[in-house]
Image 1 (cartoon, rainbow, N blue to C red):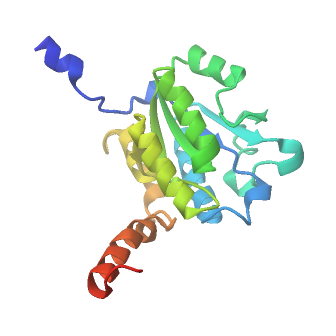
Image 2 (spheres, rainbow, N blue to C red):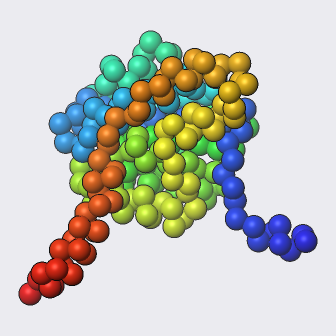
Length: 219
C-alpha cells in the first residue's frame, strides 16, 4: 500500500491557507502587443478580487518598470494594496517574494500574467523545482504569439504544473456553497469569464487535420 501511495500522482488540491496568487508583469507597455490582453487582465482581476475576499496573499511583479511602465490600472493593484516588486530577471522568484512564501508557509501558487513562454514559464519552473504546486491559469496567461502561448502551457504541464481556469480556482478555494464567502465569490463568476482565445487555438490543429484529410497534404 505504501509503495502505491509513493508513486501516486499529485492531486493539486487547493488548500486556501497555503495558497498565494502571483500576478506577473501585467504592464502598460504590453497592452498593444499581447494576445487578448484586456481579457487576460479582466480574468486576473477576478482572481485578485476572489483572493481579497478570502483574505489570501497576493504578490505582483513588474518587469523593468522604468522602461515598461506600471501595472495597468484596471488590474486593481493599487486600490487593493497588493505588494508589487520591480524585477529585471524573468522569474518572479525574487528574494522578497521567496520570503513571503516562507513566512506564510505557501505550498500552492496560482500563476497569472505574461508572457506565458517567458516570465510565467520561468516562474513556474523555479517554483516547481522548489517543491511548490503550481496552478497555471490558462485564461489569465498570454503571449504576443499564440504559438508561444500554447507551447508554454504544454511545456509547463510536462514539468509538473497544473493547467486550470479562473473559475475552477475560485470555486476550488471555496470548496462548496457552505463557505461563508460563497455568495461574494459567486458574484465574481456569475457572468462567464471573457473569451481569451483558447478554444480557437485548440481548434486550429483539428481544422488543419480535417482540411488535409479532404484536400491532401500541402506540397
